[in-house]
Amino acid sequence: VWKLGGIPNNKDGAANLRVTNDPQGAFNLQHDARFRPNGNVSLFDDHGATLGVARGVEYALDHDAGTATVAWQFLGINQSQFEGSFRRYPDGESVIGWGGNAPDLRVVTEVDSDGDDVLDITFTPAASPYRAVKVPVSRLDIDMMRVTAGKW
Image (cartoon, rainbow, N blue to C red; front, side, top):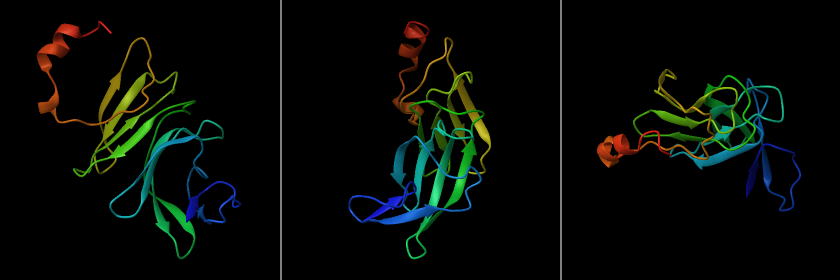
């Protein structure tokens, strides 16, 4: 029924929602787009094909005006060339999997509802996460993690 960003023409004649007032211009090479309960759309923006940096971003959609504007974002430090994810959670926290984001060694960042970085995870040697999701600690087997740490 509608299309977010990109070129205005499409094969189905869907309405095009223009990205407006985005500090990074727009998104590109995006992944993990999700509808939010409030009607917004969140996605991981690799930003690998234009100037700017990778980010987790949420857009507020205005179907009447035909626009999408940034409602929230967390910026990385450089572009990602592939993969990546962005999930927002009911507790207000967000998790960003940075994808192919070398030379940044972070693979996952968790931020609170104010946009403050509360957790960074790095792997050495560098790795690129396809998806990163938050799970309750109760779902983790701490003993298994200790026994297998560093053996992947």
